[in-house]
Length: 95
Image (cartoon, rainbow, N blue to C red; front, side, top):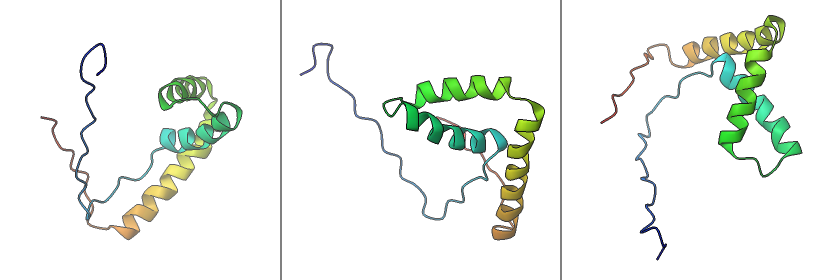
């Protein structure tokens, strides 16, 4: 037993097999690309550290750098609309 007490296991959410994922926005596209760069140099970095670094880079990036990822996001959105024409984002309230 852990000296602090019992360790809680994270809850595993049941995923709906018909769930349609949202298209990636520009920042998520940027983060995915930069995560690969960070992992190459620091393979032990965790997601929290990676997110902090990438967010800082994003805020410091020029509009020209960001525009590349905005274009990728727009393309992803258009493809998503073609694949799922009736899709409407419907956020679930947390309990």
